[in-house]
Length: 121
Image (cartoon, rainbow, N blue to C red; front, top):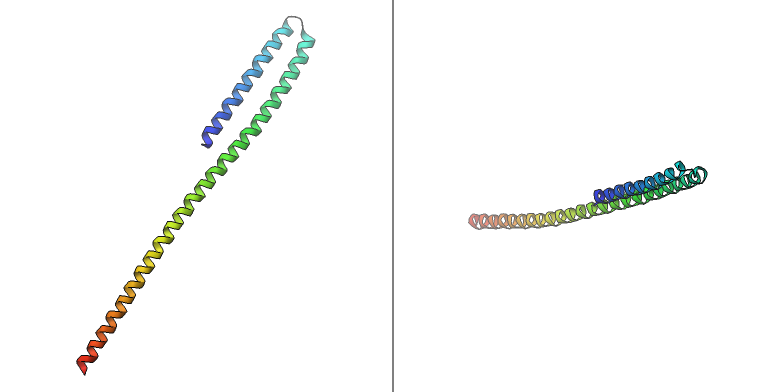
């Protein structure tokens, strides 16, 4: 998901750069036709606007990437929690099984001692 978001952001940035280049190219052509002063002002304004848009897009991309990383971290933490919970349940089942086996062994030992005492008497 994070890679897809990053790729979309790269495509958006390339599209913005292409639009800025097209506009700049058009303004350069106007300048070549004799409208140099006005075209230069428009070119400077267009370049400043394109730079501002690229900076804003970069910030949006960084925010989307950070959000995607946070989402991935959260999902990974949830999986780890589920795994730990499953281990806890498994350990509890093993503890209960061991306690039952210990109780059975103690009962068998008690019965054996009782039989020995009865045989000695």
